[in-house]
Amino acid sequence: MRDVLPPESMRMRAATGVFADVVTRAGYGEVAPPLLEDIGVFARLGDGTDVVTKEMYDFVDKGGRHIALRPEQTASVCRLFVEHRPPTPFKAWYAGANFRYEKPQRGRYRQFDQFGVEVLGSSDPDLDVEVIALAHDFYRSLGLTGVEIVINSLGLPTDRAAYTAALGEFCRSRAADLSEAGRDTLAKNPLRLLDSKRSEDRAALADAPPIDEFWSVEAAQHHEHVLQGLTSLGIEFTEDRRLVRGLDYYRLTTFEFRSSALDGAQNAVGGGGRYDGLVENLGGPSTPGVGFALGVERTLLACDAENVFSAPSNAADVFIVDTAGCGDALAMTTELRRSGLRCERAYDARSMKAQMKAADRSGARVAIIVGEHEAQTGTVTIRDMSGATDQQSISRNEAVEYIHRLLNP
Ligand code: HAM
Image (cartoon, rainbow, N blue to C red):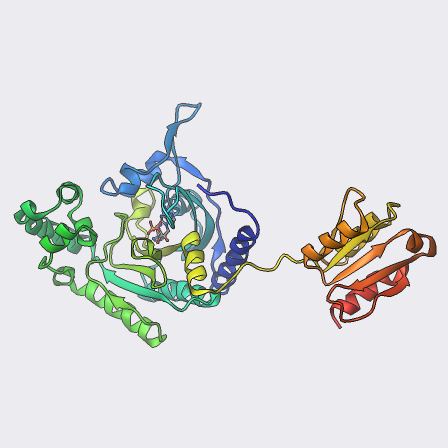
């Protein structure tokens, strides 16, 4: 888990702003589910997933309830939907922390942030296209150009079940060639073997049957519609029949966003898909759903690697240098801040030299000097920190207006 300090904290806030702009324009409203839920909410994500079986921070609270810190927010949004029954299609976005007890490394943390959207109540394939396009537009808005979209379909639940059985049978016939961990995965969820990174598993599965041979007509049509939609928007993608993703709730469309600027192991900057049975699983009416979540830290690592979306400047506009100590600095600082400027000052009655140094460090374009002479004459001295113009003495009463004119000519 990381501490986030300025300027990275400002960068995360700025990224949240960009995401909010993109999804708000598409009619999504922000939701903020609690950080923890009854463990049953997340158990629905499937007992074949590491996220549920190995990585959950769960505990019994003082009331004897078994609860867990959320490992993701799709299940929380579905629970929230069942509880509040908003009108459909319910289009929600969120930003916030998630917790997974994973082996930490660069780009993989035990507390990490996600931005995401979920749409509940429509099976229109245009929505699959819409959410992918929103993520794509968000990455573009940050300036990222190296994010690839990888897409697949897991078919309808019956297709998926038939495929899982066929794949299981195929893998069992090759069990001796699988890695030990691979045999473990085979027992729990053969689908997850498809994206195993272990070389023995990859070799053993080299001619495993592809999932599209098991798609029903409906699944194939849905997939075709999604691909055509993306193509019509000029959004490039790659199809990968082995993309199954780490959570069990997906059916039909699944997709992942990968940054070519990041290291292979942690290059997934986001992912999502359709999960038409999850709301029902949580006790709600049969409700289709589609959405994605993006890893904020990884997205910003990709920005570092592509040299885009640097932290916003936290430079002050104005710095107050006070050598009179008569309260004028306090008043002036407050007045300038209230007028909308970013105004910094020195404290502890330090020497003029130390204060000028602090003014320099603050990045302010202008310093206002309030010394004894100024206090007596009702003036302030204005110094252009770039040194481009000469120092000026002006009336204290006109100072705020003057600074505004100076900064925004
Ligand atoms: P996920 O693939 O588990 O999907 O997570 C989405 C993204 O969160 C990943 O692509 C990655 O960028 C980031 N992420 C995951 N784990 C970590 C970690 N330990 N450290 C840093 N970043 C991480 C979901 O969470 C689904 N809820 C997505 C979804 C929404 N599907 C439908 N709607």
